[in-house]
Length: 290
Image (cartoon, rainbow, N blue to C red; front, side, top):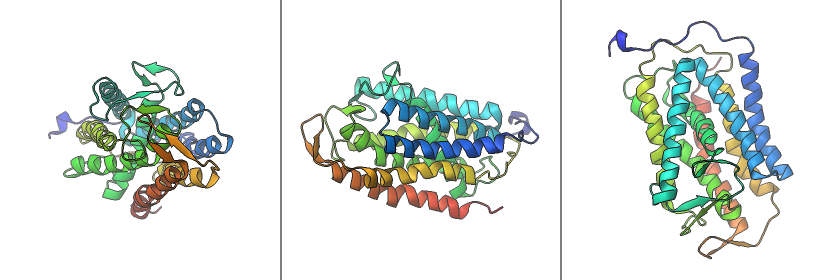
């Protein structure tokens, strides 16, 4: 690729307020998870707290890596592709399976709650950043095989998050309902394949764009530590959900199949420990030390 086709990113250091604000947003994302579980906040409120903090975090942290033009491209591609696939699946059953959203998630864009898009972006950006750390992309501009490896790894990280939340959000809370149930506590296997496809598509589109960026990112203090802190909320949430909940008994999915509540909570916590946590640790062990 010639120099003429590359996109210039802004030069110079980030304003002094960016670094402390990123620390604050990372901490808020963790606290929003804790608060929602301790106070049993309505899902729309808890989701808005998490989505808002992670979206702002991704915008600020991403701008320090790709410039505002780059991170805006990321969010547009992410929101557009995820909303299109979600609406497509609600109408046709592809790629996630047949489902619909309940009334607890607030206002919608077409058939999908507005909260869903920012969550795709917030957790998607964190998954992308962890994948970059694991694969050794320290300069922020993908080159060679990383253009294809980073989306592959990041999509697995993103799906691991869904493995920890979907049975609780659907079967337990009815925030979305799977018409035909599924083998994973009322969730169909197709859902996770659809998640992988959706996330991979928008991350691969962004990766092809990101390789054109010519300037190295302005690595603000704690550049890697901040996303690791923000992602730690994803790590601890299923474990805390199990330890803090006193719920017991059984719950029925849309097909009338009975699932034990403690089984759902226990297995999703176990899945988190052995999928989400290892990716977080790999990133932690690989990031450059100050």
